[in-house]
Structures are given as C-alpha cells and as structure tokens.
Length: 337
Image 1 (cartoon, helix red, strand yellow):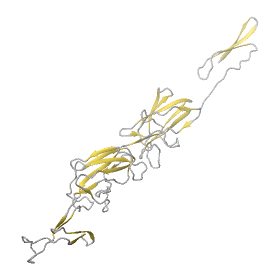
Image 2 (cartoon, rainbow, N blue to C red; image 1 turned 30 degrees about the vertical axis):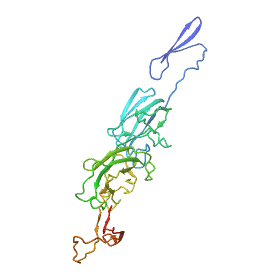
Image 3 (cartoon, one colour; image 1 turned 45 degrees about the vertical axis):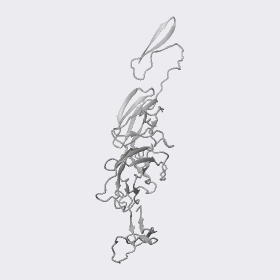
Image 4 (cartoon, rainbow, N blue to C red; image 1 turned 90 degrees about the horizontal axis):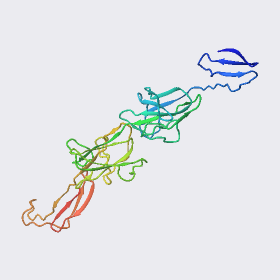
C-alpha cells in the first residue's frame, strides 16, 4: 500500500491506494484533520457439521447400543435454499462430516443405501441419537451454524425389511411335531397382526392376510417390529398341541383354541421361518356290545345288542379319558379323537 500527499486550494489530502486484494478494503480518502472510524474487519471461525448413518435394526428411529454404522452412503450438503454445495460418503463406521463451513443455513441430504428403507424421523427426546432425515426426501431440516460451531447431531437411520412365515401341515399323528411325510395343507387363511406392546394380544384388525400355497407355505414381508400370526382352522380339522418337543422349527406354534401364536419380534433383515401350525382331522372309534348266545366270540345273525353297558375310553398309558353307555341296540362310539 502506498500513500502520496496531494494539495488543492491550500489543503492536504491523503489518498490510500490498494496494491493487494487479500484482506484489503477499497480506497479510503481522508482530508486534513478528518477522522474516519468506519474502516472495520470481521472474522469468523469455520464451522462444521456431521455425524452418523446407522443400521436401525429395530426400525424405531433411535440409535440403540450395538446398532452398527453403514459405510459408503452418499451424503450431500445443501444450502438453506436447497442448492447443492458438496458431497461425501460415510466411512466404514457410518460417520461423515462437512468442515470449513461459513456460518449460515444448511441442509443435509442422505441418499438411502440400496435395499434399505428410512427410519422414522425425530423419535424420542434426544436429538443426538435420533434419525433427522425426512423419510420421503432424505433431507434434514435447516441447520443454522454459528462461527466456530460444530454440530454432530445430524444422523440418519435405515433398516432392511424382515420376513415372517413358514408352514401349515397335516399332523397325521396329532403329536404337534412335523414328522417326515406329513403333508402341507393348502388354502389355509393366515392373518398377521401388529403387537407393538409385545403383550401377546393383537393390536386391532389384521394388517395383512395370506393363504397357504400348494405345499402349505405362507409368508409376510414386514418392517422390523413385533407381530402375531393367526392361523384360521380349516374346515374338518382341529389344531394340534402347541410347542411340543424341543425344536421350534418343527413344532406347532398356534394355540389350538385361538389359532394365535405368541409375540414374534423380527429385526432388520431377519427372516423367521419358525412360525408353523399343525392340524389334524378328528378320529373316532366304537362299535357294538352284544349278547353272544352261543359264547363263541363271534357276532352271529340274530344275536342282539345289549344296551346300557358302560364303556370307558383310556389313553395309551391306561389313564381315563371319557365314558359312555351303549345304546339300546348295543352300539357306542367315541368321536373327535
């Protein structure tokens, strides 16, 4: 910067001439005796923002312990009006940041990874661990940064769809366990209910319905969460005993009276193929008590039945199950076995 005096009509005027452009004002002209207190300079500290993109395994929009970050996610920085400024991708641990920012208004835009759906926005009361991205646009609200501010609260959660299903079968021996050769039952109605309270009680009406295929198979793609499956008993069948044996993959999970399973909770990306229901066709036994007039143990023509005879039904271990009496013609039966 150079200065040279100039004279005009008996006065002295000093003109300052700009010789560099970095950090300089424009030309300032002062007259003799003049004080110019308007020459100022302002400075700011660069600001920054960022944080985390994570796999929200329970799809609740809150970063829970153990939920991992998602690497390679594209994150765009927009100005307050939505114009593109910069782009980055998340590190393997899901972290990202934009640094050296001037104070002002910004928006962060997350480009959801393939195969994932966005978590709900602004859940819970802690902004440091919620998902800030609008599920429809992938964008946060406006983020206002002051000089020197670092805002590490701009997060986005994503989850993968889950799957619930498996098999409805004919339990030919009625033991509640899928044995080799026991066939599937097609055409069985299966309802899905939400169970957000995880209390084993369906939340209102079914949220989805399926019908078993030719091999008895059914299934529901779902968001992570808690559900109950209802199997509608097919005509002519009864439900088998629930939760028999020690292998949940081959037992019947439906209450034989209500057709409902217990609460089924699935996480992001999980496939649960252990929710089965067995049904059997009721059996029966019986026949005839008669007067064996020639005592040969063979029902001969004309030998009459004996009514009013008590007949008891026992299980295979000899325990009492039921009792009846013969009809006047000697006939009896036990049904729905």
